[in-house]
Image 1 (cartoon, rainbow, N blue to C red):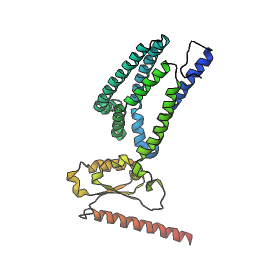
Image 2 (cartoon, helix red, strand yellow):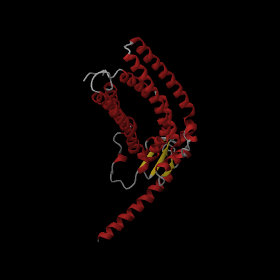
Image 3 (cartoon, one colour):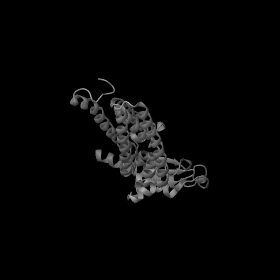
Image 4 (tube, rainbow, N blue to C red):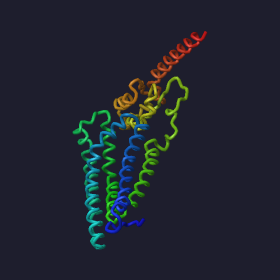
Length: 298
């Protein structure tokens, strides 16, 4: 099969199949792209993060429709000049499309950084996933140049009768996306997390240090979903960090409504009595349950 198909020569059915099959496969792979993101986010970041990603989909689909429209227009123009065998006009049309893509990308970036939160509020996004949804949408706007450039190059290839190169690029992109999703979402330093496994512990305690930020429960949801108590350590440096204890408690409760939050300072001993009291209560409760089990077996 020739790479650049001449659609004016040969059997129409064969030409249509050779040209459209890679395009159909590309459309399927685009869906795999989105589904992979949802699976990874839902698996590693939890329900709130998944809801945040879902909240941005109408905006992202609108942007995708805009890019697809540009893609179709560029493909038509290039295919027309290709049919005329006018390489100069083909080159000029493609360069102008790149300029258009850069201009639109810059506009999207400014709009996203300025209005993402406002757009999501207009859409009625709940307060729970709003912060994460805003961050996700801002990143999507900033990186919109990547899919836009893909659409422009793929439209140029298809305009030249080559629908396979775009498919190969998309295959590489999808495979890279799967690997990078796991790498960055799961976090390089957190690939093996005790929270993912049943370690046999009766209770789970989580230590959150003030310098780590009050949004840590949003970044590492699994840890906070399975913990029974969260120790917010180094509260003696609260005046020097942008750490909101009330927000931290709110984010912990979003992940685990039953988790207890205890502010402490290991250096000064502040709050340690509350931590010791919690330990004593839980040890007594655990011993009581063990005694009941032993009596039940006798």
